[in-house]
Length: 196
Image 1 (cartoon, one colour):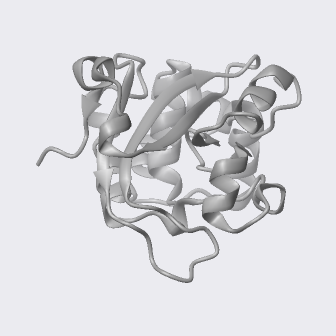
Image 2 (cartoon, helix red, strand yellow):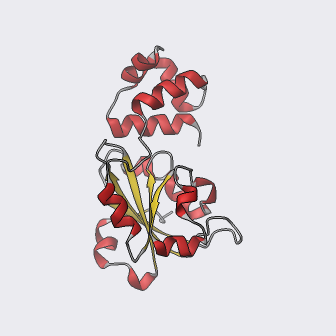
């Protein structure tokens, strides 16, 4: 992913103004605005400094219970960093679907395997208030991913639930369900990201 949208999401999650980020990076607020809009790219040192101070941890070091719940779930679920899409944990059912050992993918972004529907839903998160915590969850229908991919995506309803780790890092619990398995409360309370 490009750095601008990532930085904008980190600011929303951390409730920081552009000036606060500018102060941390040693640049002007205008520079931060240009980074977020994609008009300017920060250098590698600036990215490292900001991610070290503001970025999500990307590990479950202090969240053993969360890891255990995901890794023992009978559902097809996995947990990713809500900002970078790096895999944090996966259930046995998800691993079977992937035909891959989740430990081999931990810490790596899964975004490159996203279907068109997943990418479209992702692009709608900023506008629906996802990163400011205004929605309890979201759902949408996705078609199957590209056959033969290392991480296979099956057709079904994709449910996204936003959680926070002990260190405050935002994470996303991703569950895939068949239409008849979607609880009615989800359809009533979650946002439908599949709408045009």
